[in-house]
Figure 1: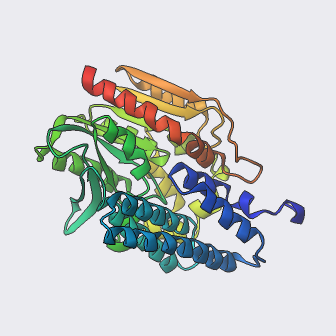
Figure 2: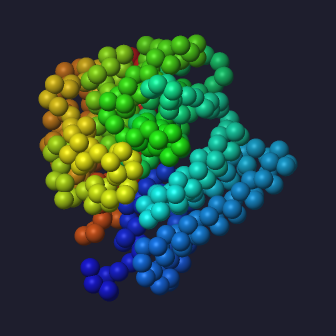
Length: 378
């Protein structure tokens, strides 16, 4: 990249895509990107400082409006303003800071403002704790479509660098269709990682999913026989592995799964594979140990209704390798191939992340419709 090609927007392409996909206000994104284009960003620390300052000040604007709305019992306005604020702290959280405490601080603000948002929500949202190991639990949210009844439930799964708060945007379509949703910080992400020191270990992740099903089975407002999993990106791989392991899972949705054993490692950014950040979330596992846990072995086969979504232009997991997972499944199944080339992609962009994010705003409704069909006709 020469000096004439330099652009903060090109650098932050994957981040911008995720922000748009998960509900950050596009005008706020454009305004802050334009301001950063005019800053002399001499090094990453200067970028970090300016990124935090801009999003923090924008969040504070929304929090001020939210508090005034609360004083007047305007709960809908308060909910929306806190959501805007949480999406600003989500933006602050997404980048990797030199000092991990700064990323932790950004996540804490993201989590706290999101909790203020859901306290004004029109349908019940409960904070839940799932026991996964001795003296440790992982936190999650249980979104219920209403206050009376017994509901089918989908567990939404994501991967490294995400959190239970981020999946709020994915939960809505299920709730609107009368399906409860669990979003949780599996080992290695969000609150489990930053405040409970629970690292990203695949055996613990699979255990966490099974323990979540155990928990749901004890509730009167959840239909124990109608629990499915929906995974996005790395979560798409995790959902496949979980449904292969736990036969209580009624349906499995895998959106843009990563088949690490089929991936050209050079196409995965170095910051995901090496350095402080991967050491932090994995507990200093070697790259070989970490990727080994993500491998979907030949004997792992989903034995429930299966829906695969993948992109023809995904540059981490080629379409044929994703479809190989589909062909393994002998139960009823469907697939959706995304033909669109990434809009924000370029020579320096991460095509996999961009493809997932750019299409999520409409895919989430398609998968919710499919899940509803499994419940009503399964």
